[in-house]
Image 1 (spheres, rainbow, N blue to C red):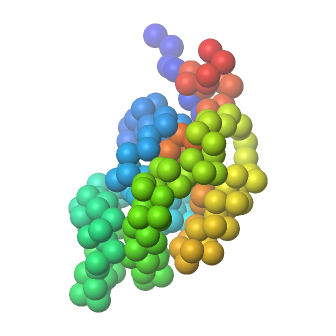
Image 2 (cartoon, one colour):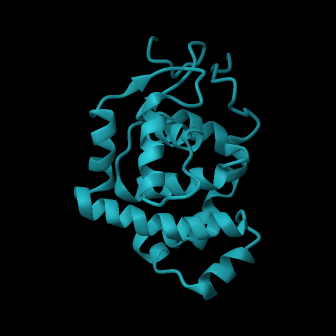
Length: 183
């Protein structure tokens, strides 16, 4: 039996990573909690590998109240200190602070647009973009700029491009990959 070919970045020795690649990455998902989860996780990835973050995903889920944006937005000093001491997650003080800050802005955007998904559609036109071997694009540049203007942190164009790939707005499976759309 031949092994399925996957994107070069997928570590085949890590079953969590393989499952994420096969079942989640590039699949459109506009569930509001998922949109917040991926935004939070991608912001923690800044300067690190996605595999590192993905390996800690369940610990993040527990630490950040199942990615409930309203709960995260309400975190005070005690909860932030608890997170900074949680060895299961990435304990970067600035990223933890950004998660709380970004949750508040995420909720503001939901109020303004009816949902974060509707906000995103204003940038994407509800289309899925297929492109490979990029780390930024005009789309990630403009979305990042707007989020920064609104006060979000750790949402540079590269982070946002990865976010758009994660939620399925940008489809980047490589041509050799069994998930490639041309097959």
